[in-house]
Image (cartoon, rainbow, N blue to C red):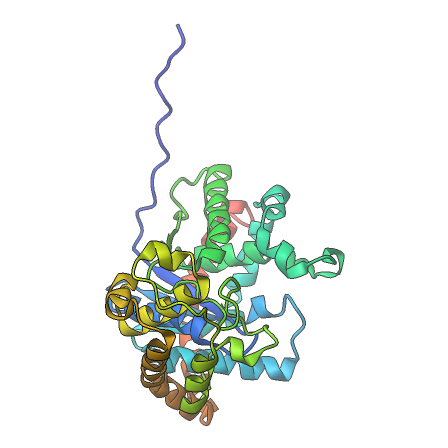
Amino acid sequence: MTDQTPAPAAPAYTGPRRILSGIQASGALHLGNYLGALKRFVELQDQGAPIFVFVADMHAITVWQEPAKLVTQRREIAAAYLASGLDPRKTIIFPQSAVRAHAELAWIFNCVARLGWLDRMTQFKEKSGKHKERASVGLYTYPVLQAADILLYKATEVPVGEDQKQHLELTRDVAQKFNNDFGVPGFFPLPDPVIQGPATRVMSLRDGLAKMSKSDPSDNSRINLTDDADTIAAKIRKAKTDPAPLPETLDELNARPEAKNLVAIYAALAGLTREQVIAEFGGQGFGAFKPALADLAVSSMAPVTAEMRRLLNDPAEIDRVLADGAQRAAEVADPVIEEVKKIVGFWS
């Protein structure tokens, strides 16, 4: 008689709760980065779990970066972290490249991950376009390095946008396969995505179906974190809309991408739900809504912009924060990579 008793489930990870995320050091940050990432990082740092926030400079070089400019971009990302409210006494802020274990674990994971997994990654197809043979190997294996970034700290939660959810699923696959292949159940956690808030995916001010991006040739498509008050207000006034008044229901809003985007931005800046914004402005024209949104955006972003500019005028302060963060990050990462090396057989 065949035993139908299911095999016992592998032991779950029992380590501490940890939160990790990062932003690539490849260009100026904008409102989408602020609402989709920075603002959420600040909210998470007071939840009691250790939080690691890194500057992803290793990811940045998957496409060509001018070396001198990369140094500046790394400081700009760090300045944005600090200006948005991240406290280096609570949050470990560091450059990815300063912790060598990221690269070491990424190589080991390259030998765990499978080509089929990477072939399914939609972001590589989008970024490489029609000439994928000209793309760097680093761009192709980007998700494996991302898995190493996360699992090196045994992070249990990762704040991500919808476009990064597929990469986090690959991270979970890598963790599960490593645990199974080397007979170490529960060694790496299977991290969960943290996707929440009314503006986790901020769209272009010129096209409600395209994500706000620093690569868009039109500067009016985005609000940069370094824009002054007059520029912010002008960009919102020029934001693409349709002639109808603001809708009064979410169903109507979902059918109008530009209106939906502006309502989501207002909700995120004001700490409201989209329903609450519609309750206040539904039925009104954009002539009334846009000035209110502009005032809110200016009042919300002006302190961030001012603090960013102050920090960028004192690069030594930024470098001190990054150096201290790198040391603290390495204190967590180094024991993990040493244990991984032992597990895979580099020594007994």
